[in-house]
Image (tube, rainbow over all chains, first blue to last red; front, side, top):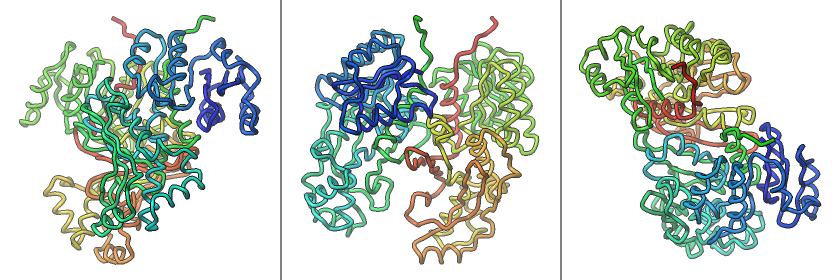
Length: 319
Length: 319
């Protein structure tokens, strides 16, 4: 398939770099102000190097992406809340042109799910978004294969930054501010870590899960969210005396979404360590399925995007 | 899709019972000596009750299954080794009639993989076999989505009976013979538990995995297999003093298959308890994915079969 990739951050660059391994061609790669566009396939390494060297990915106008022939638009621009723009606009244009859309951007899927599905229904293209939840862990495809009706709840740890911080606080007896600074030094937390530590990032993912289970109806404002900024080191010590620890746990059912710090058994499945993520999918007929792995990262998230591309049906093209 | 189900054991009956929930119709259900056949859909509850009451599933000849119009043959007859008959013959007939095949029977996939793929290449039908490895855990679909080339190894616990026995031996300090008897009383081990305790069942699953990774070339005789019958209680006590325990671990790579009892960290991912299974999929770009869940059982395995049916493309039919 021919991929048009919007977004040249870690995820967009990784998708472009790995696409060839999966048998796909990158016809466009755009950042916010420039684009590399070539109907016969862009020179990916060049574009990526330009970007990593501090320039834009190319010399074309990003608008040219929509004038190119592509099969799949990969939306990997930064997640925005509320109206989820400009991501939602990008997705709209692709679907109205009867092209497929694969999202790594959580905004449209968490905040405007019903509209997204309505656009998809009117389009010859399909919408997939495995990469929005759990990075490399195949959460949404597992639910899809079970059929959403057979899944009663999804629970787990879906933010690696918060999990890393709590793991280190427990392991070293250090306080939150200290470990946050360490995480930023390591590149595990961003310069502005707000969405990771206040639970928003995890909440967006569980809102997406609730939308999948209930076929729509949820956005971020429906979620009950508490972050980890106020978890004191003493709470972790107290928990440890009882064979427990604290993790930022989220839960999605058809009735709603909650995210907050919870006590979990120290050696239990939910006590994943470091930046690792885990989901527990509760099913009607097959008990509880647990999947854990790397929830974030350029290549990790790119594998989820490319996995989605592999599940898309062929499109007819007006040549 | 219209399903023709061969095999009326736990798996066959569960597939027939759950098919409706997934939007499919059962046009035939056969055991070794009888069949229920109806092109408009058989009365599933009646057929299942007859079988559970000790009779055959129906009053028709099993041969009539192949004279009925169906889209997917579900092969859920008992696994046989070597020539994998009669399962392999059933699959051959369906593919030669350009119908799809979904297997829960490990025999054809472990023992005659290359021939199976050759028949598939000549057929309009596709072959899927998620249910042969890990029950409800989506192992093969995860590898398929990653693309097999991106997977370097698969490791894990894929036999719940052996895992239950080792878990109980460690927990209670009991010896193997005692716990085996307990497992048989609970229905966790069969009257003839040989394939579970000698490692054959696990080995068949890892052979299937190696065939998927390497695109063929392996059968059971290529695997190095050791079971749990000779693990003494004292070995588990010694392991526990060191924070470890013993599990029947298998590993599949492109180079081969090994199954045997191994020391694993007591609180590590591989030390699943009871009848639970776990797979660790090692990938090139996304680190290690762990999936655990119920590896066996009628409904559990049926969800894997029906998940496969959901991934099949529509067939043309000569009406």
